[in-house]
Amino acid sequence: MQNESYHLGLLHFVHLLVTVDGHIDERERAAILAIKKEENISDKVFHDFEMKAESASEPEIYTDGIAYFAAYTDEEKLAAFVHLYKLAEADASITNKEVRFLLYGLKATKISFEDVVLTAGMSGK
Image (cartoon, rainbow, N blue to C red; front, top):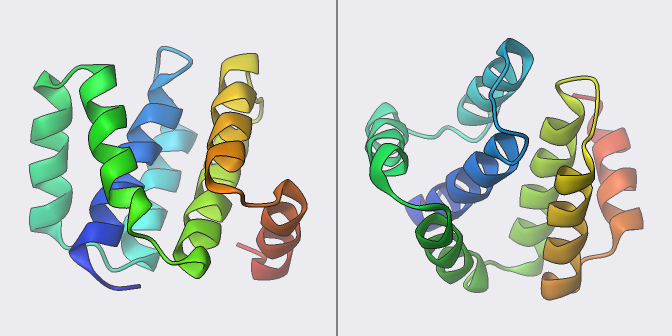
């Protein structure tokens, strides 16, 4: 799972999730950096994505993220949703928009919510 396409897809969805409530707080920012470190996302890929995200619209980021996500293996999809689930919890409250985003994504990818929660709990991070 150390490929650039996986990293870019993950960054697209991380960005969408953290901006859905209108702001990125310090806990969310720390969680993003932890994902970057855990997944060994290069500084270049991370910086290039941040530059893109500053000027791209939400629909553009979503469309590009879906394109990357479509090529994921089931294992990569599950790993990405575990990151997103943990990130949604990072600011100590999950908004309705975050829940809708996660549920829609799970439905679209046919990933089980129970599998995400179980895997997140097992990873302990």
